[in-house]
Amino acid sequence: MRYICLFSLIFLVFLPAAMSAQDSLVNSGVNAVLRQQVEAWNRHDLEGFMSGYWDSPDLIFFSGAQKTAGWQATLDRYRTKYQSQGQQMGRLAFSDLNIQPLAPDAAYVLGEFHLTMPDGTTPHGRFTLIFRKFPDGWKIVHDHTSAAQ
Image (tube, rainbow, N blue to C red; front, side, top):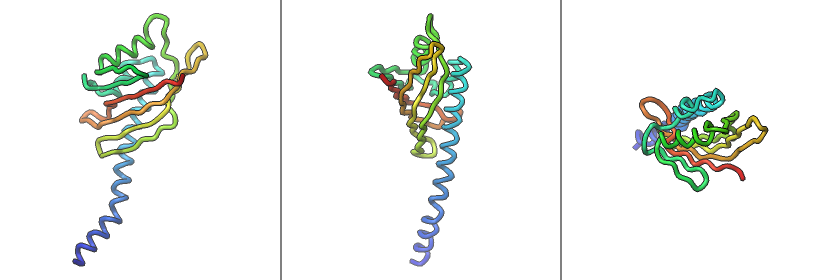
């Protein structure tokens, strides 16, 4: 009985530190993907931006009332909206990021996006992302973005 109590005490003392270290690894991995996405967007490198997404037909992207399924369809949507005739990508920034680890290989992120367009308009809104860690790194598997009206 004494050993069980001692083990329980040790477990309770060291568990928060282990979880904190694990959470820190999740946060830094997810944050790195988000930084790389902003950098790629601001270079007008849409494929680089999309490297933060899971390259799968099971990727889900919601924007407003529209659902886009799959990596290629999501890339095509971005191309139509930001790189087609008369469209521009602008300058992207993320803010108010809240990364919440769910497991060593899963997290969700709440945040805001801000675009500054060449014409001076500033589209912005909020997003919820679900990340999973794959052998090739952290990837967004679900994106729900809502633009401010």
